[in-house]
Length: 345
Ligand SMILES: C[S@@+](CC[C@H](N)C(=O)[O-])C[C@H]1O[C@@H](n2cnc3c(N)ncnc32)[C@H](O)[C@@H]1O
Image 1 (tube, helix red, strand yellow):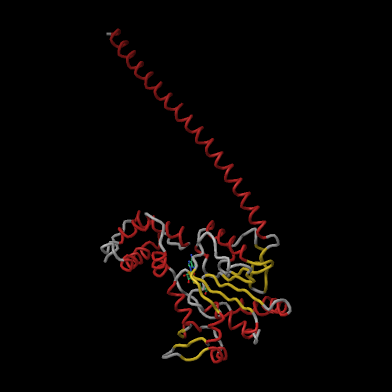
Image 2 (cartoon, rainbow, N blue to C red):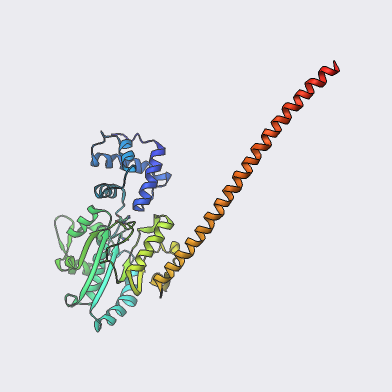
C-alpha cells in the first residue's frame, strides 16, 4: 500500500488528530503521518487499502474507541525510562514525599498519586519504588498510585512489567537486585508486590472530563506529554488537573515543558534545579475567574469583529456605488469626447 494522500487531506487529518488527541504533526512531519496512516488504514481494514478513503471516513464522524486505540498505537511516541530525571526524584524524596508521608502518618495513612501519560509504566513504577523505600509498611496504608495513557499497547506492557536494559539507563545496581528478577534473555520483571501497587487505566487527556476517581490527588505527574499540545488544549488539561488536585498539592512537568506552563491556578515552586507547580490557594476559583474574564474578552472581541464586519460591508457597498458612478462618468465622458470630436470635424 502506498501513501497517495494529498497534502490538503493530510493537513486536515493533522488538525483533527490535534483536536481529538492533542498530538502534533506540523507540516515537517506530514510524511511521518502519511506513513502511519498507511498502517492505520491496514489495521482498521475495509478501505481497500486506500489511506485517503480511510482519512475521509475518520474525518466525517466522531471517533469510535477502536479508532482512537489504533490511531494512538501508530501515532504516539513511547520514549521513557526508570527514574527519568534523577534530580527530580531526589527533590521528591527530600522535599515532597518526606513531608507528605509525615503528615499522613497520623492522618489517615493515605496517599494518592497519578502518572498521566505514563507510557509503558517506568514512571509510576519508579514512584512505587520510592514509596517502598520510604514507607516499608506501605501495605498497611491506603496507597493509590495510578498510571494512565491513551495507548492501550503501552498499558499492556506496563501491566506485564517486563523491561529490557534500555529502560534501566539510570538505575543503580542495588535497585535492580531488590526490585527486579530476570525474565529471559536480557529482560527484567518488576516484583509482584510493586505491580500490585500501581493500577493502569486508559485515559485520553483531551477528553472533556475525567472519571471521579481521579480526584483529591496529592501529586500529578504529566511529564513529556503536553509539550507539543496546542496552548489552549494544554491549558484546558491543566485546568482539569487542578480540579483533580487536593489543596496545596503538586503538578509536575518535565524541565523542557516548564517554560510554557503559565496558569493562574498554579504557583511555581523552585528547588535546586527543579521547578514544581503547586495548586494555588483557591486554585479552582482563580481558574474560573480567569475563564470568565477570557469569556468576557472573547465576547468583546466578537462584538468588535462584528462591528468591523458591518463597517467593511458598508465600505464595500460604498466602493461599489462609487465604482458604478465612475463607470457611468467614464461612459458619459467618452460620449462627450466622441461628440466633441464630431463637432470639431
Ligand atoms: C514521551 S512519553 C512520556 C512518558 C513519561 N511520562 C516520561 O516522561 O518518561 C508520552 C506519553 O504520552 C502519551 N500521550 C500522548 N497523547 C496523549 C493523550 N491525549 N492522552 C493520554 N496520553 C497521551 C503517549 O502515548 C506516551 O505514552
